[in-house]
Amino acid sequence: MTTLMNDHLVGTVATLPLVDGHCHFLLDGPVDASRFELACSESRLPAPAGISYLDGAVGLAIRRWCPPALDLPPGVPMSEYLERRTTLGADEVARRLLRRAGLSHLLIDTGLADGELTSLSRLGSLSGADVGEVVRLETVAEQLASEEITGAKFASAYVDSLIDATRDAVAVKSIVAYRHGFAIDPGRPTRREVEEAAGEWLGRPGKPRVDHPVLLRFLLWSAIDRGLPIQIHSGFGDRDVHLPQADPAVLQPFLAGTESSGVPMVLLHCYPYHRQAGWLAQVYRHVYLDVGLTIAQVGARADGVLAEFFELAPFGKLLFSTDGYALPELYLVGAAQFRHSLSKLFSGWVADDAIRSSDAERLAAMVGALNAKRLYGI
Ligand SMILES: [Zn+2]
Image 1 (cartoon, rainbow, N blue to C red):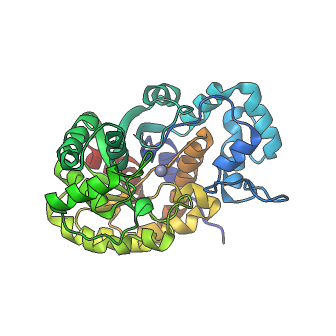
Image 2: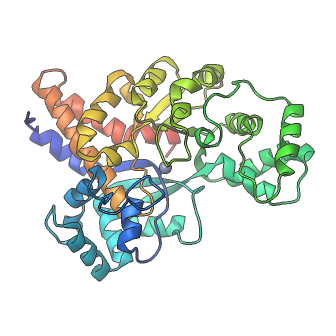
Image 3: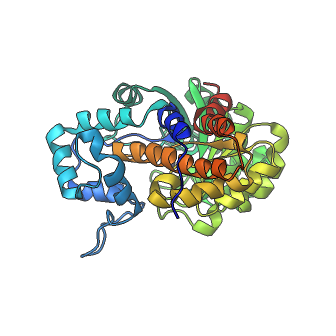
């Protein structure tokens, strides 16, 4: 079935400057074909012989939305696209793709970083967007672990470090879903519990990842005390995550127990549990949800999935992001697919008399930018 697009609405959504509420750094320098392919997938290993990850929703979306930024027609074969990428060079490609995404702000999770990734300011100058930092709670703890610190001192040192690290940040992020899963005791751990857990964790050999459930809870409660919005990874991602334990419905006791704090909790990604997330956003005052990663990863199917995000969640609690990471293509695909699928969804509603065109434009501006500006104070 074809949707009759509402031209005025399409034009408004196409030029709306978007606030990208959750994204990461880019790979710095040239990217070869196999690295490019792997970066388009959540997988850690190359595809088996005879299979390409680019023959999937993301690959098609890249071929649809990105070639025009490099002066090629939509749909060109990937080999031609990659050749053009090499000719133009990494910086020029990043500059063109990021600018075409039309992002006014990038809120960057700086916790996923190693030597080959670009800096906050460089991403800002390539994209022409204002950049804000989102600090990962677990990264702050792990940096402390590399200093000589005892279990007894951990709690107060963490609180000080978090204040320091978030001086200019717009939000913090938790990856408790990856480190333990959402089945955590919802209450604030006692001083003694934190001391014992920290002592046990810090005593482990090597560079320890923080995965102790008591410490993960302590980080979350420290973040609540800090008061910035807390972004929480939920749903799919790379295979470190135990998927059923990343269903935000499992986090319900914690959400219920923290509602009175008033600190916003933003459920990121959510898929395939975005319907659960929508319900949580409806029944808990401080719960929000973000469509990032999902929209890019499902490609042309974003029409249907975005419609599901709009089922139960109050529209003032829905947030756009790209979850762009590594490749500038993923930022553009996230933005372009969002604009396209949102325009289709709302055009259908207008045609069905479910909404007036002017209201559809107002809602698009809310989800694309205004909700995030209000929530993150930008
Ligand atoms: Zn992310």
